[in-house]
Length: 314
Image 1: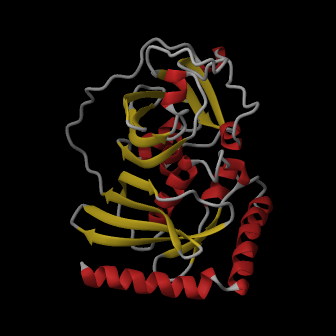
Image 2 (image 1 turned 90 degrees about the horizontal axis):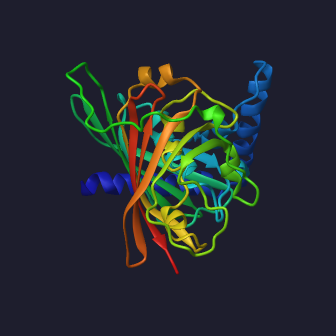
């Protein structure tokens, strides 16, 4: 393990020296991101902002260059869901990847600044059917986020779900879309339609009985669901303390874990239709709360669950 960690650090420092502080390399990365949009136009389509925002430029030996997108801006830095997707994409695009994701954890070590970043992914261990990864997102030579992921080769087995999707929901188009006025940019990148537990009309400090929410949501404009967009959607719920206490306060996710219950075929079958989102908190105490979420297909299949620890300050 120590030899692997030493090799990881040597590789990271070499990449930072070669790319992170090299003006010519920065110019090449900027050219690459412009080329992505150009290629999309040549193919007769407009590249979805999500795909541009999670795009990574291969470096050497497991390191990639990326750039934050103002389209997914949050109060400070980028929306956590897009960072979650970027961390996953560093493994999805790695030549050593085996299988598809079943678990992903992103730890937000510090606020991510707008601009360039590097993200590295290294396979820690590959077994017969599972593969374990370690990831790190770096800005200015300092880790801004760390993560782990488990990929697996799924197989046909007996299956059952003890969790249940919300029943008898109104159709998404019968509900109003969440207004994005005065909210961070990332909110406008999602079509959210709340059945219950949406943002309060006024932050008047009148505490609600619970923080439970049910909504329909999807990318805006609509985009076919895949593992990357699902990883972002799992963070697409407003902080539970805002729903419960109905007052504004500084909040920030410290750690986010996502479990993928769907395979690629089930995600493809969902297409670009709205999914069902359920969110609640389990506990608020000592400046932190746990926020849990479920993402269901419109056919009632559980696609993903997530759990995050969130900091708040009164």
